[in-house]
Amino acid sequence: MCGIVGYIGREANASEILIDGLRRLEYRGYDSAGVAIFDGDVIDVRRAEGKLMNLEGEIRTAPIEGRVGIGHTRWATHGKPSERNAHPQRAGKVVIVHNGIIENYRELRAELEGVGREILSDTDTELISHCIEQSYDAGNDLLTAVREACARLTGAYALAALCEDDPSTIVAAKNGGSPMILGAGEKQAYLASDIPAILPYTRSMAFIDDGEFAVLRESGIEIVDAAGNPSPREFKTVQWDPISAEKGGYDRFMQKEIFEQPRAITDTIGTRIDEASLDIDLDGIAFDADWVRSMNRVTLVACGTASYACMVGKYMIEHLAQIPCEVDLASEFRYRKPILDDRCMVVPVSQSGETADTLAALREGKEQGARILSITNTRDSSIARESDDVLYTHAGPEIGVASTKCFTAQVVALYLFAVKLAMVKGLLDDEQKQKLLHDVISLPRIVQNTLGLDEQIEQLAHSYFKKSDFLFLGRGIMFPLALEGALKLKEISYIHAEAYAAGEMKHGPIALIDENMPVVVIANQSPLYDKLISNLEQVRARDGQVIAIATEGDGEIGDKANDVIYVPDLGEFLTSVVVSIPLQLFAYHVATRKGTDVDQPRNLAKSVTVE
Ligand code: AGP
Image 1 (spheres, rainbow, N blue to C red):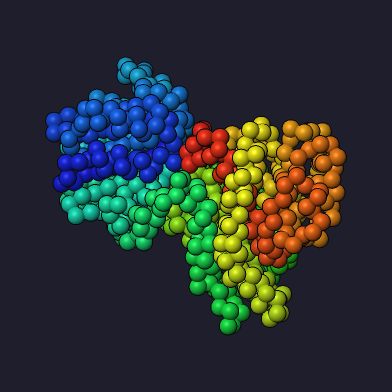
Image 2: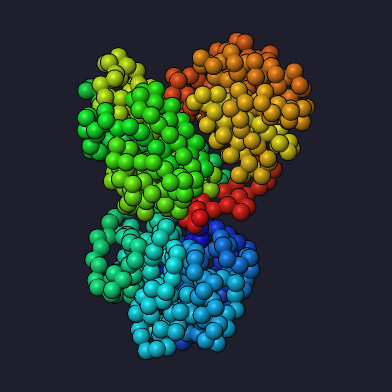
């Protein structure tokens, strides 16, 4: 939800490294930003409300020299966005930055004020700095003080602390869904909420686990457990290249990521398909035939766009593997006391692998004995680390807050999973296997061709961008695509957009139709095509404007819709990926025409690591 970054080393340019890192973390929140840097004698704290550029301007006016520092970009949870509530927060000699939510902050605040401490902000974070200072003032070193303070906290945190008496140390702590990554350099050490923030400086990275602490010094990084005992960690070489985490010549990250989808799909398929033997190997994940046949349910859990990928996956799993499959919003699943057992498989799907609700849903499933197979784009993320098996998408870093390439990669991963289950159950003959494998191998090329619609869709978007409401309609496997199309549009253009199963229109929503209500109808060739045509005619009969997404070669739909976008057909399952391309492009071009901040839409964050 927030982004934190830290640096200690021989270079006296901590402020440049911190600001550069925060720029790569702005997608996690941008209500305010701040840095705290040792300038030789004292810790100089600079904070500014609003985007990082405001803080950059301040530091340009009054530069800070220093070799040790921590930084923060905020998505407000406790306390409105303001300079007073910006991080770093301070108590005496102790300065901290924090990502997460402290659930017992009310009790803590009462306790601290009860012993005469003056709390200056509305944040839960400031309370942590007071807890650390209390322990430090009692004669403990910074690490012990942080450990003692964290023992008083309930909730999620990833934090970094400095103390004015000890300019050679940064102490970090992590618990709950907030990620914390460590980077090791030559006489330099780094910490960050996400890989791109420190990737230009080091590829050697490791993760702090829940309940652990890290001490960063120029000489190296030490990780200890809650009791203070050493907890050695292997630093791995991260393969991402810094350039791929940049915009690569596109205007915005979202645009780059839309056009990266052929590559993202190719990489997610990877070497998992063996066309010669007509088999799929999902990274060695064991699918015992007897167990799969005895499985009584697959439950897909996710949030937002990932949940729509799950709804597509449901069709694939039930149609291909004939296993009952339910899709649950993670925020509902975690509290509804689902009935599960060891014959169930729970599949959390999450790009970031850090979404708090999805992580909690994973833990609920695990507690009830279900097998956990997660689908995530982030290696060693919290969700990945707590799963029995992980099926990674390989979409590369997705920086735009609106998910695009990770959505289509998730659908592809779910397709491979569904086909694998069908194969294990012996439900497919060679001809069916050949078709299913050929379709997915063809997908990157078909998606590449569909991206060629960009100019036509940009023109279309420019004739609709002033509308204030949209409806999206779909049936069957395309209903989740209607939901995804509506979400893409609303989250980056701020235009109100709703999606309905097209068959629902006559049960109420049709009352909304008039000449001011554009309706996007996904009407590709399918067994439900005729029903969609009648939905489309119902809309037109009420002066609604129809934008149809149809199959190339459809000679009927042209005079039934105001505008038609023709896409190639790739069968009943993977046409869902093809259809998502015009939906993404339409949302992107409407939003850019409106001038909204496409990569960092208001009120949103890329990774929702709090409830
Ligand atoms: C998608 O465009 C949104 N940014 C949001 O719905 C996102 O998909 C959701 O928060 C889930 O994130 P995750 O995949 O990282 O768990």
